[in-house]
Length: 336
Length: 290
Image (cartoon, rainbow over all chains, first blue to last red):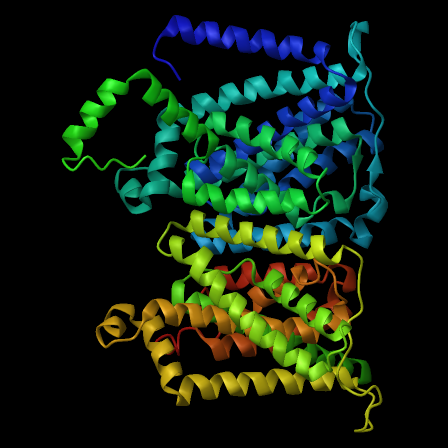
């Protein structure tokens, strides 16, 4: 956000302290909500890497979220693997699943990929209920897990522990995502999004990058799913309807497409708006999502993150901006 | 053998619904290259309107016609108000707006009518006057209605000046504009027609799948599969694809995968067609038509 390194580090330090102190100031339920925000933030970062930065539209990330959640739930209920160790396994499984789905996705452009992933998401609940898998998945009933206790007799309660677990996993994932996107790889992804032919002509291996991005994106989502299963202690086929995938889509669009901070804003939006809106009516949250989706496309196509960036730039350099506006557009018509 | 025949025939009947949805999707796709993810919800909402009218005491066929007219108007309005501003936007924008539309229609139906499942009347007599046990009267009626609708759509596009103008606008907007066709309005009419066709599909499907805000989710998926299988730029291919998908779905459900995971048949068809033959079965040959 700012060019001054001291200020930036100070800002990060304040943020870090705030995140650590937060669960001690809130009630259990609010800690749970904060935990879910972190969980969604991981998922949305994964989806945003794919959709925002690489331009591959997925309406089916709920399927990968479900795979992650089920991997954790099955491993915890059927084997002796501790719950925390199932999280990387879920990530790895989704990395594989995403890579495999990314192979046919290579041949599908924009709209068709959206369609294929939409189909995947619609079919997911049915596949999870499949009779032959019932021994593992528990069929329609799903799987109930136990709430994990904090380790090492830490002086925190179980909700706070889950919050810190999510936070401890989310921070390195965000660092990885940020490093990935600001460096050579990120530029390659953006180049593929903006002009695949030109990107290929510059020597970027588009097939490799696209499938890998699909895999990595699914991995983030799967880790989110695994954490979601641990935090809610319950998975069932009907927890992963098509609307879950569309819900993630709402998150990245409202938060800001192709923006890392946007994933966090999106997570806050999708966690809290339903709570506020459902006081009006059961149907209201979805209506609000719909209105926000369409509204964002018309008035703030870069979401909350884009809006904040624009406002910050204006606040910082009002004079430079007007000067620039004058030189750029002689008629003084600057869109804003 | 009897079961087999039964499965094929009832597959044809549901195929009629898929064919209608596929036709509605193709109608919009051809004109604007948009894939309407809200088509299923549009049809669902139309069906609720029909339910309201019938519930208020209107005779079935009058309510049927009134719903078609209202759906047409709704389609035109949606095109004018929501779709037009994003006509030439990137794919992500278009997909997002359609998903938003899907959310709004779904929650409006839930808000107005609630989430409890309602039954929807079938207009056809309950006993099979043709003396066969292979198909229920509703299934026969469904096929007749679908075929009649396809015939009307064909006659409209083939023999009326307006149909010709709409085809021209879809095929070559710039030249059409030069000869005085109002291309924007032709697209809006296309949306209106898609709304109408979807309404027929919804009203025919509702006695089977029952009426609730998510009733068309699966149907929409099969509609996509049908449109792709037949060829996304060929309406008649898409309609044929609908019947094919209906039969395939039923046979796969009965003999291969079991009925619980029938939706994955649609997934397999969609991914398979896109990978092996993206133009669909009939797409290439008639690629320049309508």
